[in-house]
Image 1 (cartoon, each protein chain N blue to C red):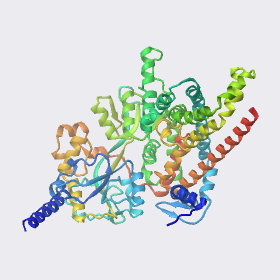
Image 2 (image 1 turned 180 degrees about the horizontal axis):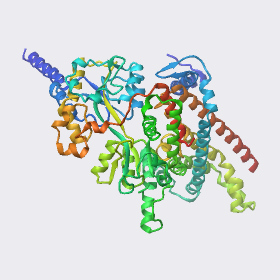
Image 3 (image 1 turned 180 degrees about the vertical axis):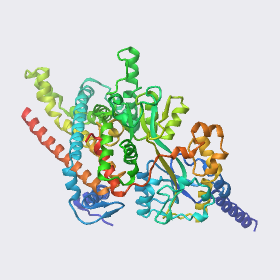
Image 4 (image 1 turned 60 degrees about the vertical axis):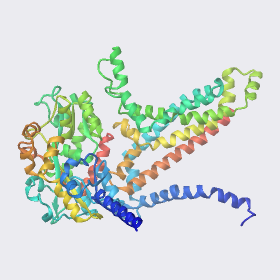
Length: 286
Length: 351
């Protein structure tokens, strides 16, 4: 029977399950990935001598560079589009409606369907015989189905932006909700116009929410695999598709591990720079 | 006493029941759809139940799963995979003396590389078919269509190619005229084939990964020509879409052969494994797959007993004509295969 427990040991006990979980399911696989990246594949077996060969291949390969840049670019577009569209909705829910719960519930409705089904429905909408083309043809605006709707970068951005919208709305809503209303009143009393009040008070106070939304969307979308595979065609391929090929058809796990680590590094760098920059910017506004 | 007897009887019934229900200990690792009992009626008759099935979507996926320890008794790859699977120690040789139908197999199919190599037989061929260019006959005439024509601007955005390096390179080897050396192309030949794919790339609407996507695109006219399996041609014919596979001498067509391999980590009794292999290769199983699936079977006797009307419709009345002058999907040299895979990724991204 232990009756006396220090705060520290209590804290340890509380965080033990999470630590164990993270250790086993995140740190350990990551460690394996690092180890694999220094090995090489020879046909059906793995050569376990330490080498930088995979990194040399990946760095020198213009395809890898191209796909990495494109992945960051697509994820950046998705993030910008999603956050820009999400902010007004979050603003509306926080300030303009009394039925907050209902609205938040409505926003989560797309999550009641599997992501794969949502991607397929975009295919149905944008496809050759899809909803959009059929509608435009019935109205008589076009004679031949438009083919630039599907199998390209735009289709990927559209699908991802739709899928990730709730992830942007929630954190922005929370940060808007937290704003002390008396600050807004004070701004008005001191002679701010509505726009000035938004730019100088509301927006800076919601920067943490915007940053959270950006990171939540940017980080997973850089590595998205299934969306570009289904709607991306050859112009919309991303780095995760190349990684998948290495772990699948090419059966070259070491190279796949290297590419994964490089993608993680790229994401980390971009996300880090973004956080630093936006914090600086927020301070300037204030 | 009565109570004890009752329990014993109940237990005996239970055991008997289990034995009956669990008549089969086999696990088959297969493409989905092949659990069709019409393929192995004789096995079910003998053992009282069908084998347990587990599925894969591509040979690469199957390979990865088996290599990481997945256990089954039989698996169903195609001949281009067997050398790799054998090299990885995943499969064990087949004892052909235990195969009742070995003598009745179509000789050309039996002799495909990947069935027998290194002095052992590794696969029992089951079904086969053509892979070729399927095109819309109402939009493209028979004289116009050729593999080389796909590089022309008229086909812009109207071509579909499989998202699988080996299949795409088979098409490329035929298109670039280097098909004779498909399995061990020289650097120069490999470059010719790659250049062919690069030339077609600007016209490619999509690289298809599921056949349903291609079938729909051909049916709607989204694409006019696609490199695909015979199944697509049949689906289109069944749906009355004016389309067919490009055949004819020198036009370029390939043949695939798939079959069953005995996995190294199999633990089902050998008797059941061979009963299953024999059931699969029986003439009446062949009749079933020919008539209801439209796939040619490996047993030559199957063709004689099938509905001759259908045989004619599908062009199986002269099986030899289907694979004459065709490229067989043999196992590509490992180094070349790795090169194909990496190069194909570049081509698809426009490099």
